[in-house]
Amino acid sequence: MDETVAEFIKRTILKIPLNELTTILKAWDFLSENQLQTVNFRQRKESVVQHLIHLCEEKRASLNDAALLDIIYTQFHQHQKVWDVFQMSKGPGEDVDLFDMKQFKNSFKKILQRALKNVTVSFRETEENAVWIRIAWGTQYTKPNQYKPTYVVYYSQTPYAFKSSSTLRRNTPLLGQALTIASKHHQIVKMDLRSRYLDSLKAIVFKQYNQTFETHNSTTPLQERSLGLDINMDSRIIHENIVEKERVQRITQETFGDYPQPQLEFAQYKLETKFKSDLNGSILAEREEPLRCLIKFSSPHLLEALKSLAPAGIADAPLSPLLTCIPNKRKNYFKIRDK
Amino acid sequence: MSVLRPLDKLPSLNTATILLVGTEDALLQQLADSMLKEDCASELKVHLAKSLPLPSSVNRPRIDLIVFVVNLHSKYSLQNTEESLHHVDASFFLGKVCFLATGAGRESHCSIHRHTVVKLAHTYQSPLLYCDLEVEGFRVTMAQRLVRVLQICAGHVPGVSALNLLSLLRSSEGPSLEDL
Image (cartoon, rainbow over all chains, first blue to last red; front, side, top):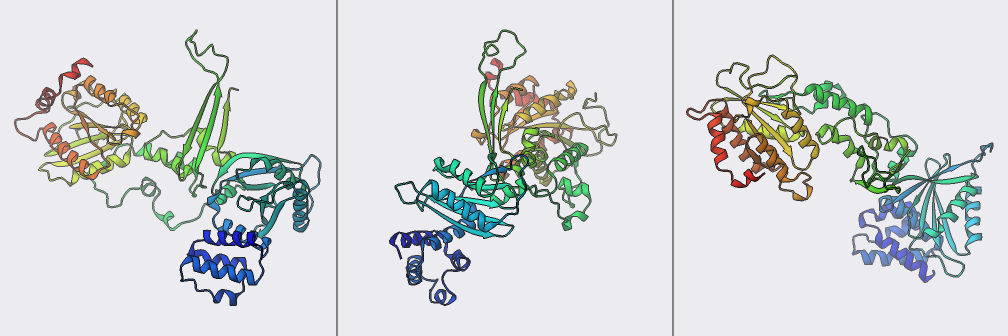
């Protein structure tokens, strides 16, 4: 086994927390049951790793096997990457061809290898007709860097692909081209949507987030449930604005629904507008160039936070449509210009 | 437009009613709970409202004390208070209104300057109290104070009236308020 491959496998296994190790190794399916049984997973991590590397050497692990392990690790730790969303489109009048996974993989790999002599391309198919692609980039003269790969998750029955943001941005146009041509599309466009949570991005892009589930709470009367009142509440406390509260609850429910919101960490608004003022002759109004301003909202769970603003009394309902349109418009990056 | 007046209803026997006005319902609820836990000879009633005017209701008892809760973290809260103040009759401000500013402890989150609420309280000639309602210890102490003030405003403490209390509180304020 090549030294670089051994080192790569070692570093990958070292990243895996001990409690996930057996699950990931089983998913990898490279080492046999018998081999795995010989390993004592209760030792110190370094010893476990040494033993595993030894077993991989016995079985002569290749670079492809190592890359596959890396893909599986990333699939278990999707949140460590930030994912961008790309949308492809077919040209006008093009037929919808039947998708052939094998042909796609070959074509994709060939395009990249023709452009850059040194790339490592690996595939792993998952459910829902999705394929995870891992690309390690090199140049005409240098070997691929296995420690800074790019991941693409392509859902073959849709025109959407999700790509992990990486620092090596110069390869993005080539990657886009390869993906477009291999999947028999005409054009690829980056959407203004980005998040760490791949599941949430999927839910937003495929419009699957608005499913209401029947829960056992739905039998309690609407008013009590929505106002969050304790049934044993003190009768000496009287809420004066019940009508207003119900209005806020109703508007919030109409805007956000009853279902859990997809998880996003931020929303960013770039404003480029000219200054508008009622006063004539103000210095700012005479300015030809638009004013620029950037507003960023961050939260561990942005959409749930926005949903709770009006009921908590921090903002008035209804909220600005710029905030509430995020899942609907499938964007969390906005550019606001003068019309 | 309905305006709250202090003496437009007859008082109920041994009952004192306080009205808490503020945008954040959770805070008002907590304060109400703390107040009701206090030992008090009078029967307490707490009304919570997001803003004024209140929906018209014949069943509402006479209100003895109004506390406007302003959250220093939220300009929305201050704006709401300022708009609600227009629906209170001038005679209420003879000791039966008080302002409570919360959130001063977390300076980095404050978007309203302390001076703004000081000036507001001064304009309406009413006392301003500070309390971080989210901290239980402070809230309990404030609840005790408010219960005491409420009893005086309801006339349950012999020899002290709301107006007496107001002048007592005012004379202890520093001269710097005169400069505002």
